[in-house]
Length: 247
Image (cartoon, rainbow, N blue to C red; front, top):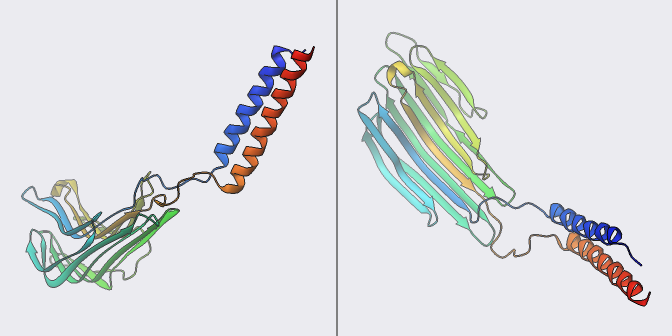
């Protein structure tokens, strides 16, 4: 006769098999649907007086291209076309974003920044996202001091200290817990004594998701192995029950 301890061990083995099968299933992106955002400029309350909302801004869904011909608001000045674009494909679980402007000036009061060829991009798939934020050229000017050149095509998260002003971060890149990659071509952070204003030029972010058409979360080969193990366990239990009744 089969003991209760034996049956308990068999049931535990079946549960462990199921847990291992689930653990072997491939991990999809954390988002339920692809996302993307893009804008060319934004600034919080500069010196406590001026804030500029993300301009022009595009977001997926629904996506598309938003443009502004020239900008003269807050610290920003320029006559070039500002373009923000986002797109996505739920069936493939992909998304993309870009933000561009040919030339732009930024007046921080204590310093001015000139930029050319700003271009930020982001591309996401179910397995992850990549991006880049570059400038063709740029400089920071302070009163009575030589201009400080900004590196073209800088590596991710290249920082530059501007004495008495704050920091300039080029090609800033971060990824959050949902796999969303955020890229800023240029980020300027002023010192707390200057109200710690935050200025962003060229923002693109995107995140992928499980393809809408992919219903099962378990790889077919993994499912086949797990199914066979479960069937085998069930067969052992049936056999033991029959032996008990026959006894």
